[in-house]
Length: 123
Image (cartoon, rainbow, N blue to C red):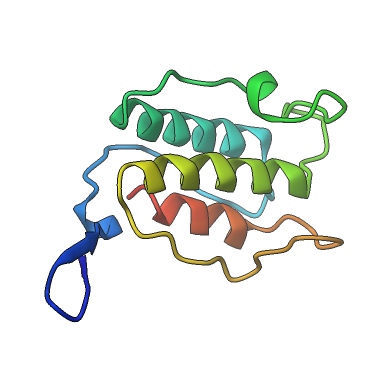
């Protein structure tokens, strides 16, 4: 729990969130579309926690962006979209939202660290 100076709870911490979401290992093969599908399942688990409907990739990314799929390039916009959808559900549930090591991914390659940071928010 996050408390103010008076000791009143103002937000829940991620340790208060008990969800079971399994993820495959990130290997030397790089970041795969399947890793993004796992993240979307985690986002939908959190959305279910707050009583919201599940979403698909077509619901949350811009129409001109390719869906994460085998053989397609994973874009920074995919990472940013997953972060945003997860953060909005966490905030709605009253959880504190912390920043990311690299909040802006402009002109940066997608790395395993980006996946790991998102995973850590739902463990």
